[in-house]
Image (cartoon, helix red, strand yellow):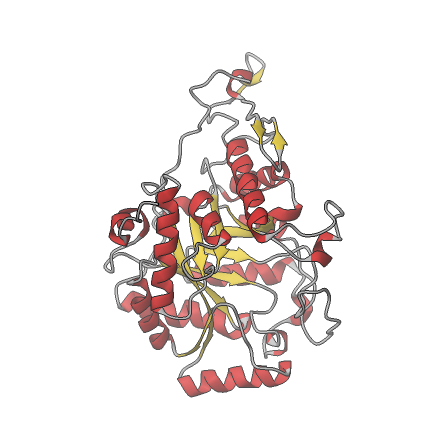
Length: 411
């Protein structure tokens, strides 16, 4: 097998120079990432399933000029056990649908990207393509999609599509097909397919709608979509991943490399982030996609306060309420906004273009990000002072792609 190219060979399509602005997003989930976040003063637990709660959280993120928010979701109740519901009643259980929540919030916002989570394992790509295309229309070009897979047996039993979960590699292969179908369906209407000419009575040019004729191991979809092409052409597609065994590219990293516009990596330090970036770059190169831009964000859970001891004490108090120290598959930062800014500047030298921050509690840590961290990054000249684009792709410096079928004969 030929040796892989050096990491520097991939740099133009993956990294941003230290002088370029940093990208920031926040992951919204319940009352916050910590299991006891709902018990924090100001958490508004009685409003967690209301539109106003989510609208306020997204408004706070937009006031901080963040690139986008993600809406976490799953198709099973939250649980501390991989074997099924844990029976706990002292933690938040239940969620609103992420796509529908994003659509409700969209008309109340103007600039920030909206990226709901969808589990590819138990959903049909035709439905998801239509839903996210609709979100892009409603938000006027600010939609994205976070694709995740599930290997939970108790979640699979909610659907009855298969007796046991797919192996990890096959789950990600299915997600790859899922994304490919979604992308083709978004392109199945040409940009100018809608005529809307009252005088002639022609609303649509049928020659500019195309069958996608996808035939794969997991899906067979003819198309076209029933929803016109999204304003962005292709809304942002994201996925998360963790490292595989020593020397191996994980299935999740492979999915990021082959199929997404942006990937989230879980790393414990700058060296771990650098290793993740290098693996994904090499997988992207092997897939023949090195020239196509790909953003890579590190995934961090944050507890912020005016000084590090106060941040640590607050986390310890939450841990005591939860009955156990908080642990995560992402790095957990506890400290001040200035200290977090130092860490972000250090880690971005690993080839990262941004960060997905998970507030330990929405009530405290989301405002700490928007009103503490963001001004600190602005003082350092590495974060925007105003939104510079009207679409999510534009905020991330990604061009609007042409439709793949536009020059081909119609369906």
